[in-house]
Length: 420
Image (cartoon, rainbow, N blue to C red; front, side, top):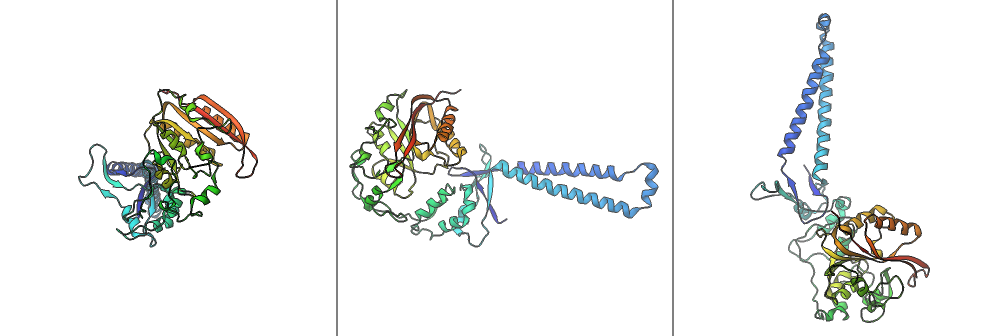
């Protein structure tokens, strides 16, 4: 009917269940409404015996009364249908996007089509068709999404990675797949692991389109974030000392933190990990760490990969694509900040708790609190999870790369309890 359903949430595919049951329920409810109203009509139009003669003498009035009740029944049926459609939409979790508009790319229309299962209904899941998974917020950026999907099939993809990232930052995640070939840059000068962890990365293998800086020297002069000041300089400067040499009481040494773990640390997740230095230090200790990042103002993902590490290109608005209780350690810093929306940080904390195993460590590293009110709110949120405080330090640091003012930071190592 000129629209297509989109599944809210994440994943690589979404399925729509067979509609037989829903249709049966709709028919049953409509029948009930119709029957009820017919009984009401009968009750209203049936008069006592002493008034029957009067009614027979006023046929036009009787017909008018019946007509009014029929109209009422039809309105109630229409309202019931609308309500049922809303309930079905809510229960199924689908949103709609109008792809009948002329400015919608044909590739987007094709991608969003429902695909019937070749063998019909699946006996185990009850599904009858596959539905493409696209972020529900894509509806708000339909024009940009259509622009992203405008390309030559089997040809080279447009150089529009920044457009894709813009969509992701607007909540349009996951993005639809495309049938074009991404530009591939020859990765020359790569070192073998683990030598690659601290060797300089060639600027020629990084993508600079859509960025203000066009070289690493420019990036190292900028304050890209509170946790990334000169973070692309991995051969000299502070980045080579991070996690092994403390500059203040809020800076924890990585070996001291690992010594607190029960059951050992094997795999970890670094949220907003900058240029990948935390993962590099953990790799030196035979711990595998996945680094979550986006290419905001810098080619973070490519740089991390060039060091022989695993970058995960994902925004923090997206549910983490991991199963429950799988990580031994989760490391996060000021990139965890939810801005002025405390509920955003709350949702994020619950997702962190979900993927961290019982006994695992949550390392909150130099989280910028801003003021005492924000620190208190964060403290109360953390205490709701019942974590054991192995380390807890609140201190001040001077913003040397910015305002020069003293700022409040919280660093903590917390251990997740076992829950039944």
